[in-house]
Image (cartoon, rainbow, N blue to C red; front, side, top):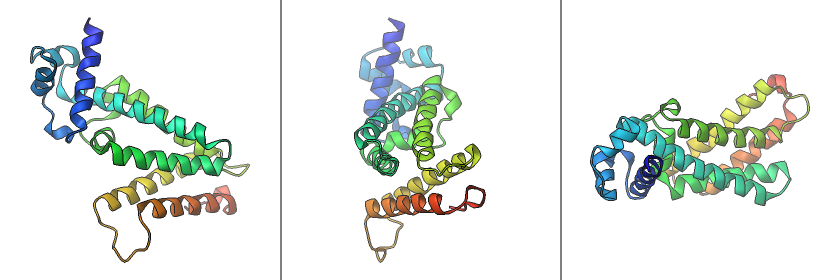
Length: 200
């Protein structure tokens, strides 16, 4: 019964994130939505931060599952899979912006709940394996990790700037084009730059 209520509370939190940011979610509101005591979320999660981390973890797990499916549909070509992962991340940011912001923002940390920590590891592993498959022979694991971080930061940064309308309108191309051009640049630079001297 307790485990089931945990799941229902998290699901209620995810539903609320569909309508507004995490800052607007109160534990009392979650309890009211389920018709349970306003103390129930505290009994099961201890505090709001841990509850929100569990919600973020459940949502990020769903996003990781969707990204994994997109990679499977892209086939075996490493470059196609890389671009498919970019598209999956764009979809995540656009379709579930409040969840994305909670999972990747400062309100919670990955260590606040095992659900969030595990989902973050799974999503990172998808990124790592996708980027690693695009590397030339001899690329060190350390360089691959740096390239993963650079690729994620580039996609996140362009998408965030576009969402906030901070990219000048004089720049030709929409967000999708800019992101995939950045992806093609990354793929090209990984192949022509020796691992020891990569700067992308």
